[in-house]
Amino acid sequence: TQLLKDPLTVESAVQIAIWNNRSLQAHFEEIGVAQANAAQAGLPSNPEFGLSLQFPDRPPSAGNLGIGIAQNLLDFLILPRRKKIALVELEQTKLQVVVEALDLVAEVKQAYYILQADLQLIHRLQLILDINEAAAALARKQREAGTMNDLDLANHVAVYSQSKSHVAVAQAQARSDREK
Image (cartoon, rainbow, N blue to C red; front, side, top):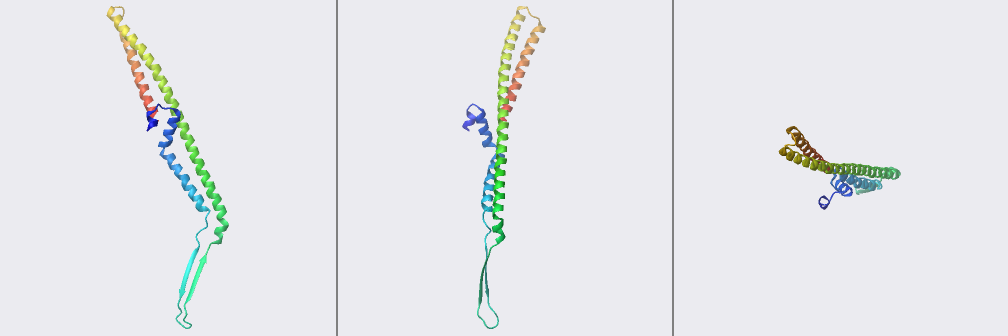
């Protein structure tokens, strides 16, 4: 929230965008999932244990106990390849996040510089508005003195009103561009 209170710089705009971009945050979480998958891919599958107890119904009547353990040996053969594939997928996920982050940074910087252009335009339009306001006030005094006709006065007042309109539109655009 402190970033929003300080004057907006291109760096702070980028920070705000990264912190508030849910899609990018979700992609950061995908990196964690891909890391977990890579760790899991490096482990062999669990062995299977078996236990059997048999009681024959004829002599000899001694019980027969069987204990067994089984492991898929093919699992050990494909383990290095599976790990390599998982690491490639992890790198791919990281690169996707980097690309999205760079796209976001470029988009934010573009929006920031558009906002700067908007603010400069507002400044120039405000200067024009001040000049047109002074011209309209002078025209009113000239009309009162009888040295200007009604049509010329109306033209000066219309130009002043149009300047006010241009400033208001530029300010609205700047507010919209600031949100971007």
